[in-house]
Amino acid sequence: MEPARDDGGLVGPPPLEPYAHARPVKFQDRTWLHVLLFLFTMASTTFVGAEHYASFVADFTQRLPNIPIPWLFVRGLWYSGTILAILGCHELGHYFACRYYDVDATLPFFLPAPLVLTGTLGAFIRIREPIPTKRMLFDIGIAGPIAGFLIAVPALILGISMSHVAKLPPDFSGYELGEPLLFQVVSKAVWGTPPDGYSLNMHPVAFAAWFGLLATALNLFPIGQLDGGHISYAVLGRRSSHVTLAMVGGALVLAWFSTSWRVWTGLMIAMLIFFGRHHPRVFDEHVPLDRPRLWLALGALAMFVICFTPVPIAPLDLIRR
Image 1: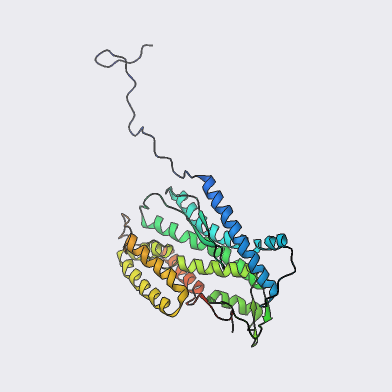
Image 2 (image 1 turned 120 degrees about the horizontal axis):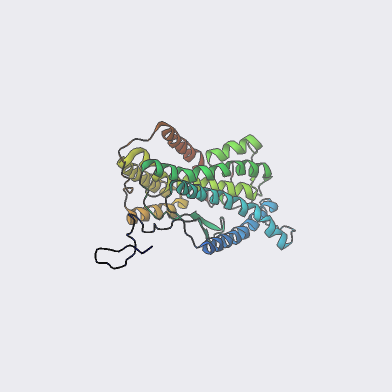
């Protein structure tokens, strides 16, 4: 059979079908980079976890634990495994919600950091295209905090159960960790109220859960591009900009009374200066969310309340009651 000819009698290719151009391929990642950052973060958090375990064994004293160094680093996995599970599940919640809605996003980037208490700055994913609808924005925004919270709660219960009450030395000094409401409830349910001169000596798993609760609360701040900002915009539309300003004012008040809020408040203000206080619009901005999602939004607010502490860290006695 002869090939088809055009009117000029010349042999040519068949006509192109409409929309035959290749669509951009989504969810393409440099997997090696994500794995490398994860391994570095696992190393930094394991190192910090070994220090947490040594402090746990020391029972508020300065004595060094009689544990071989390699085994001490193995015990550091109590902390690193727990915090990486909480942070990782949080970001994978966002990631799989993006996959469900075919919104292009990266795998989680873990951030190692030489920080004494945490060993990490957390983790994040990068969403590489606009989110078109309020439902999609809401679901992607809330999926992370829910996933991380579902890991943090059993970790908190396990960690508090593995902790114990110990006597504070008369000359003890250290850091006081603010206790979120959920932490207080679980602690008192397991150990009651320690007598004067005693305090709860937190197992590294409990500390990782505490950090996970704090990270959840920070992400749920209804500001800008944070998870709470996505949720607030999906529920309130453009009125969420007023919530953003109110929360920045609240963060400034917290920073006045607690030095541990100053860095976070500065980062939030920088984010608003860089991205603006208005959330990027979706095309159905004026369409209200359905009732189940409104209930989930109230659940996110409750999660924020029970994970929040006004003074996360203060250089005072550790968790004195």
